[in-house]
Amino acid sequence: MLPAMLKSITSADATRRRGRDTREEILSCAEALWQGRGYNGFSYHHIAIQLGIRNAAIHYHFPSKENLGVALIQRYRARFAEWFVEVRKIELAWQRLHRYFDLYLDYLNAECRVCPSGILGAEFQAIPEEMRAEAKLLMGEIYDWLIETLNLGRQQGSLKFIGNAEDKAVEIGASLQGGLQIARVAGAERLHQLLAQMSLELFGENAAAVAQAA
Image (tube, rainbow, N blue to C red; front, side, top):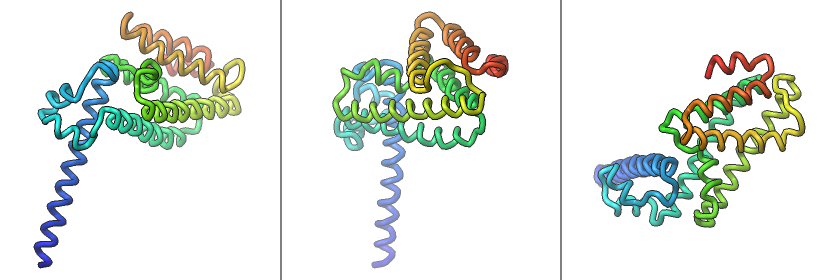
């Protein structure tokens, strides 16, 4: 009896492992399609073809596209939460903000994909309500981190800006999202120009180091 029970448990664990792998593959494929085409620009059929699986396999993990969309945004939130923890280990605020700029260069280099907050903002009215709620949480978390970083930088003297941190955070977020969109049409150099100008305004004497790293 005991060996049979152990065999059953092992089999169940293997099934769960396979399920998690498939689930992550679906999420990764959907993320790439969403950032490249928009939420309404892909279907389960596109995912199934790319992964070589049946639509039913996708529906098993995500019964509806809304379920898939919510899971994607929750995964974005989890990633950013981990990223915030790591970046907060950096002492100087200007270096933390530079790391945030680097994220947009990563999006640029990944076939000029739109950033998560950018695509959610652009499609906010076109996505289901539960996804909107998750999107608001994600954007709020990024906004709060930007405010925290700007205030820390002002206290340290490592960041220079006029006005309050709340307004500057809005400007930075909007500029980066817009710059990435422009780069998709006008070329990668446009985002590099934007980052160089923002560095001059924010990083002061450290702007040259940022420009060299970019």
